[in-house]
Length: 276
Image (cartoon, rainbow, N blue to C red; front, side):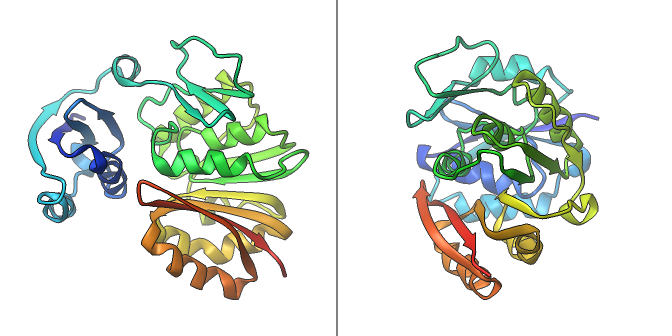
């Protein structure tokens, strides 16, 4: 099956927003370029009306121009090696690919070869989730990573001392890639395939991590709460700053207290604690 390729020129500040928007409508790989992003999706997964809606929404404010093409499946490791730079989350963790040199001056280090998956630490949501994880005691805790992607948050949980980690994703590409990344980082957990209802994890968990999108979070929130221990933590991201009120309006009646919130590039991240 061939891939559709969209070479998109846009303003710098809209790169992350467009990556997130396209990831929500079936795009499964992205490369950041000097002029914008290259976005890829299988022909069978392409939703033209949804794609056009995103372009129409941002074409003026982001100054978008694009070129469409078709390409066969490629060696994504080679493509990422050309375009993927390591990142540092404060002085907490250094995220790099296997072809980058190590930096032992950081407290923690994660090796991610992302291939087709979303979640390298470059996006503001992943960056903030890693930062928030650093604020929560993971030692000997049981952790659930919902929509794990590359597995980066599950790997961070292990580095922070979690004793048991469960992870899953709805995309089989992510599951394959996530398990490869688990192996690179010495994580024995195997990522499962499916939604939270299909995987049906059994609580209780000390920490639940969910970096997805607003609609999925709202739909699954009661499940997260049921899986959490009293005084357990729910870390959320994947939504815009202006969506915080909708999320907290959903979580407060479920016994969750807002502990912390952050925003980066208009993407928000929350730490909530189950009180009842």
